[in-house]
Length: 217
Image 1 (cartoon, rainbow, N blue to C red):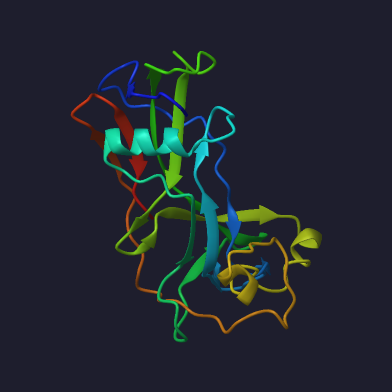
Image 2 (cartoon, one colour; image 1 turned 90 degrees about the horizontal axis):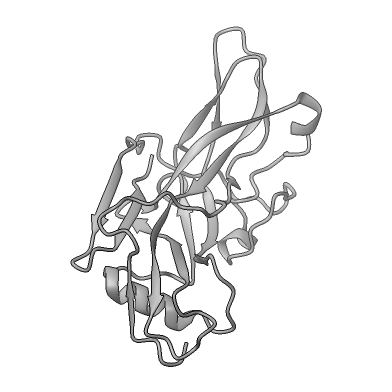
């Protein structure tokens, strides 16, 4: 954005609630659990591709992302493709519980770190004074930050999920899909020991821009 010189939060030091719609990726095959001994566990893991977002539409958003990133000392990644669900090498897979008596698959929702504020000092009158919110997925030492959860479906619907669409060559290349064929699938991989806890972190920059991030599960 030509002539953009500054950016600041409208409400300094106040946590913000992201107003974006997060994407949940399928990271397991579908399972119907008719167990006589308890919940069923399904192998999880795969590659997901997620991207940054901005609550306004302009032809060249890079300059806004860059300026916000400089202000809050955080890079708003254009696109991230990363493995989730444990180590990406053959071995004992990480698993997730599907409640007995239900059908479904496991989904992974990447966390986004967001910053909100008001654009000022802009040569472009169309964006001067506009409140903006920029969000981006981000990685931790354990990989892409996010949460896993069982997604419940009816028994007939789950039959379509015969394999894990995140555990394919296409997903590794950044082409996520909600379906796959058995021929596309890679061997189940993962690490059943790498389960963390949920926490919340508030980062506040020296300029008073609040950034809200959620640590991974």
